[in-house]
Length: 280
Image 1: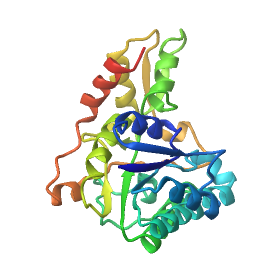
Image 2: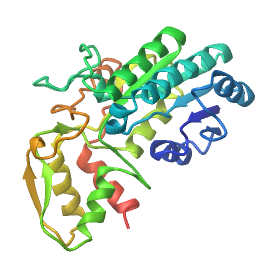
Image 3: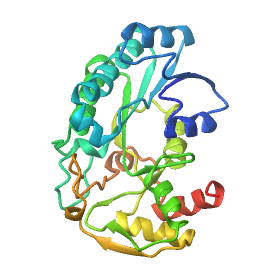
Image 4: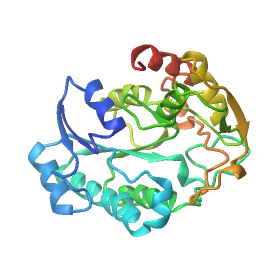
């Protein structure tokens, strides 16, 4: 199958290139292809004669989004609209990646696909606007929400922890009052590879099963790769950031269950696999 990957040189994009190597792949990334320019992305999709476009390109630096809101909306909203228009014109199916930040993050249970959105950051609002543009411009779409992502090459929380663990020093303080689903790019790419052959449409959550705080995640990383430093739990209030982090990033995979599809793997299982296969 002929597949275009926007943002194909990013962390998830690189994993997808490896996982989908049996297909005919076209990487649409800067500087050659600019999703904020409709002619640029339309030309890339048309030239590739794309059957599927996997839309990974995004501005994901959440704090920078707060200070550069116009750029965030240009990339995450206008860019997604351009990708959707290009797909509709070319008759290509669109698989787009989104985020837990479209939710407020204050629910006492995991968010499912039909829960009301309510982003509290520019990043989340711009990604939600991108979701809405995709739904408006390209009916043949699947929107996959992911969170707490890590993968070969990084950058990610896992890579930061591995680097800091290797350095001697005082115990590392890690936030213990934000909860989510640590998720590997390998797990996401495996499911996307399956979805390419399924006529699946709509919005799905695609994080790994099981939940953890950032402190729990770090503790499991250190258990897999012991370092020179200890860990201490701390509160979010000790590390104020320009963009507020959701207290609850947990995503329920209700759509997968209702479609009769297999569940995502457990986050501890995927972390062990990652450390075994990728971490040096």
